[in-house]
Length: 113
Ligand code: 5GP
Ligand code: ZN
View (cartoon, rainbow, N blue to C red):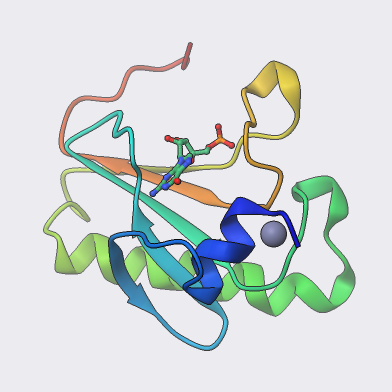
């Protein structure tokens, strides 16, 4: 399989792993866009939001709850953080295995670029 995030999730390609469980792996982004920039990546290969199936509903909820836990642990829950996914070219998706960016540690402008 040639997917970068499948290889990171399996440990075939190294990454700075923040935490993991049977459903997902959380890593530090290699090119951080904020003081805290994590990627929450499900182990299951899903291309993006458009590829989600009904059976993925629990997984996506789980990812969001893990993000909330990390936000509290890292002290950014109250100050604020952003959880985003990019879908296809115009949104800037470059890795076609669904993942959620968790950004925090600076003021994040809206609308995004
Ligand atoms: P996307 O552009 O698909 O929304 O997000 C992909 C993210 O993965 C980018 O923020 C990019 O910096 C990050 N990334 C790409 N390759 C690697 C890698 O090999 N290791 C890590 N940790 N992050 C990566
Ligand atoms: Zn994959």
